[in-house]
Length: 324
Image (cartoon, rainbow, N blue to C red; front, side, top):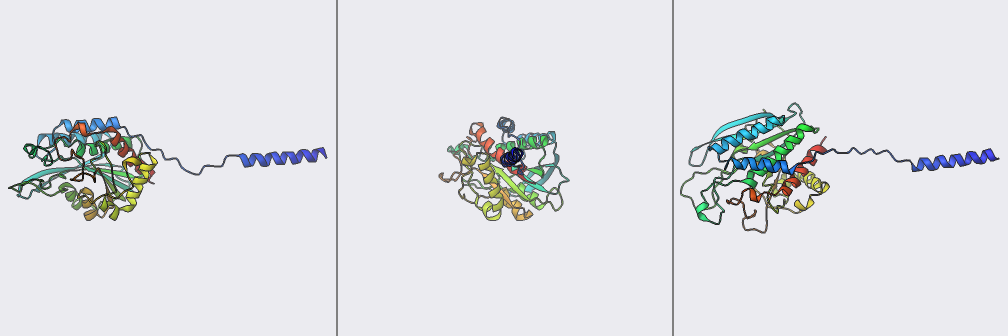
């Protein structure tokens, strides 16, 4: 009888132990590199140090060489796509799109892009004497490229499952000035991205989707869901806004619709048929729809905020490393 009782107690103990045993965790932890905002800030500062990156200037040439060199340093296969385009007065403009490819053999690809040129006009400056002065474009151009350089640095260290193409588009900011002009020494917006989309660096180039960064380093920045991004690439918008929430940066990415923006992502979707979204700082409360320093001489390093760079950079890294 005592042996029988002992056996029953043993079975009860074993049953209790089995119920208390930890269950196997079938979820796979996503190892996302840490975005370094200090590093991105220094890349921004370096671009601005060359001066306004207006095509045809020494500053433009020097910065283009710097960006291509950094991509190579981070292990990317680099293509420098040069072309001569024309402004509306038929004057030529020499441009260069800079493409850095990671795992070029991988057919499963994601496109990241930004424009690297700066506005030749400070056409929203309060002082009309500055309207024909090129801007530094610290936020409007340099900060976005800097975020992508820091992402490239992290990708070199720890490759995600997808191939990455980083494209720095040229001649995005040559649209008509917002002041009366007598000549037509200006072009269209997004000239470099249109050229690339019609003449990709790889024949029949395709990617699962694209993410465009534009003005992603500004102070007090908010990123609303750009209208055309939501209309044509809603699944990509969903990925990014969910990533912002997962990384704790949802305050920068309000769950609110934004206005439609003429930007490089439209060329990517129109001519390459790649769903592409625009992460762009807007301000629906302002008259022009953007930050107060937009297209002014105040778009200098004082407009750059490391916290904004961190929020956008970490969010995009999370998106990339979640892909399979």
